[in-house]
Structure formats: C-alpha cells, structure tokens
Image 1 (cartoon, one colour):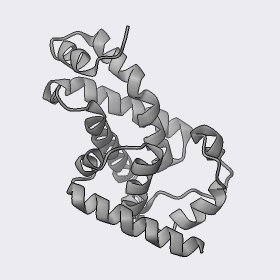
Image 2: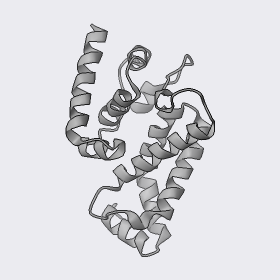
Image 3: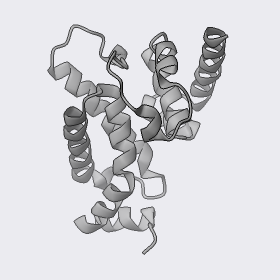
Length: 175
C-alpha cells in the first residue's frame, strides 16, 4: 500500500492509531537522524525520538492534513531537544551544543556522503547553531526553505539568506 500522508493524518485524527504507525514508519529515520546529530548519543537520541513521536501522537489533532507533517515533526523534535538540555541544567548554550566531538562517528557511511566528515566537522563547529541547523536541514535532510522556516520560526527569505551566507562562509573557510 502506498504512503498517503493526508489520508493517514485524517485517519489518525479520527482515532486510528494504526495510521499513525504508518506516519511513524515513514518519518522515524529522518527525525532520529535530526535528533542524533543534536545530542550525539544513541540512547538519548532514541529516547528523544520516542518522546517526539509520543507528543506528536497526543497532538495529531492539531495537524493541518493539507501540509506536509514533516515540518511539524521537526518542530516537535527541536523543542524536545531544547527541553532535554534545559532539564539537564547545563551551563552551555543549548543551541550551541552541536559538537561533533573527538570520537570518530561514521557519519559519511550513514548519510552516504562521499566527503571527509572530519574536515567538514571542523568547519561546522565554527558556525552558529542557527547556521548549522539550516545547513543540516537543507543539505542533509533536503528540506525546502518553507519547512526550515516553520521549524525555526523564521521567514523563508531569512532562511535563504542565512543559507546563502553560510555557504559562502564555508567556502571561504575551506579555501
């Protein structure tokens, strides 16, 4: 059976939790990856992904079935990660806790990217958290600017401008 998101959303809103399972199956990997690259811990990413989808299930009635659900899921995931860091009472800036760390993570294999991720990670660390988020969502997740704007609470034009300036900044760092 083909995935029909609008049909599944409407079915969920009518109380069919099995339809939500299909939405979950379709988007779980994307949301997990988004969260994992924010927390860089498998167990935390799994827990936060579960929390994200539980929140989504509880609030599925608020979803507009005529819009892609992925933007809404990203927003929930983003807020769940922010809540996670707040609950840890960390003294670090929550948005700047996107550190690729010193341990080797085989990101290239997971994302099928044929570039040297260690080198890219060094440059990504020099970006602001907002710049990193926009680059991640646009390049790795291939989200449209409209979806990125919804997740981040920015305008589409602002996201385009930040992306463009960030790409220029990365190019100048690399060269």
